Amino acid sequence: MKTLTLYSLLVLLLLGQTVTAQNIEESDKRSRTQSFYMEFLGSAAVYSLNYDRLISEHFGFRVGLGFLDGIYGERIDFIGVPVLLNYLIKVSDSHNLELGLGISMLKFRKFTENPDEVDEFRIAETMSIGYRYQPRNKSFIFRITFTPFFKPFINPDEEVQDAIPFFGPWGGLSVGITF
Image (cartoon, rainbow, N blue to C red; front, side):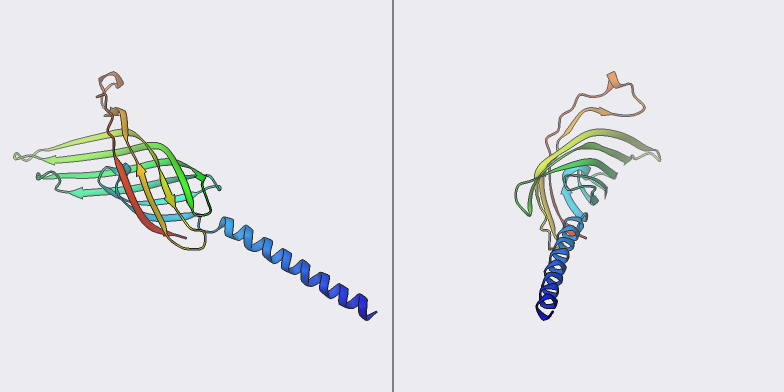
């Protein structure tokens, strides 16, 4: 009877450890699926604050907001809103190749010498190809990406055939936190 009790306790202990290890692995996979980071240059053209969410192990999305007051030595206000879908290819535990596709909504407001303002709103197609360092057990994210803008560089008030053909090679550097 003592032997059966000892074996029963041993089996329960081993099963408990297996279940606990499995729960830790599952929660580790699900943890740190959200990021908040500052991107310098990149998909918003100047800089942006971004929220990034992984929907699965490989797919995610991001949305950002960038703004600047008084660029190019003139009185020009700028707002950029990048919205992209991301696909991550895991190279190793913390290192990923990031591929993204989306749009950047860009608004420029130029103040002229007369009291009128000149507003321009543009939608630029964009993408990202880059390196993403995001360790599982730390709350840190680092990204360096190639983020070109593509034609058509559309003003919604214009017809598509009137859009300016455009390809602008660009890049970005991001640092932030994951949670």
